[in-house]
Image (tube, rainbow, N blue to C red; front, side):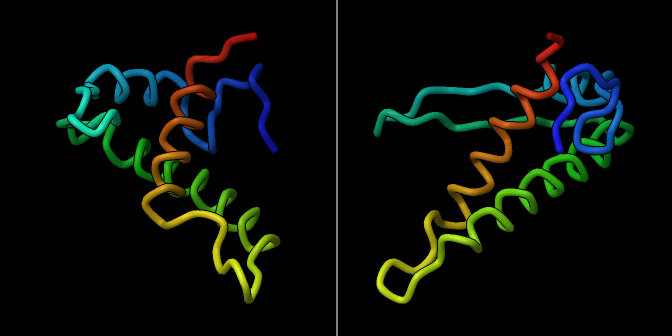
Length: 96
């Protein structure tokens, strides 16, 4: 599934994703979280969005295995998107 030695991350060039990440900032919020913001150039936005969606799809498939009548989904769509963003950032910067 995930290969940190590849030049590709979630099907996209690592170089494009690292460039996209360089335009993203995180600001602390009053509730202890972070607000993520970025104005991506047109040439790196599509690869970043595609990679984010692919990772989110991985997480959605994983979550599907844990849906129950009593508990519903294990995380909200917003939580899943946040987790996908963090996974993308970690995968793109992991060169081990």
